[in-house]
Amino acid sequence: MDKKVLDYVVEKSHELMNAPTCSKETKEAAEAWLNAVGTEKEAEVTRSYVAELEEDIMPIDTLIGFAESEGGAQVFGADKAKEVAAHAKEIKSAGAAYCDCPACVIVAEILENKDMLLQ
Image (cartoon, rainbow, N blue to C red):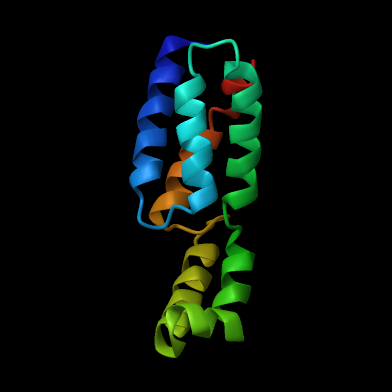
């Protein structure tokens, strides 16, 4: 893997682990990947890391649906859920494909390098 890409993904993985919206599973996958870099397990763990990132990034329509659901109201609170849904619809109309929370933004940045990571 290109050192520049590796350094970028290492940096972004640290940012991801510190993102307030990062799930426990994604944080664990990032940590496992960081620990595997430069070892014989790097390729295997990289595949698992990319799979976890692809699973956890939230498509914008999923965010809208969740924010408008009873579950969204329970997680965010009724008023905040309405704000989240309105914001998600706004960014979708501007072309967003994914949630723009800190974790999803970083995951998208990492996944832009997916092909180079999986070489």
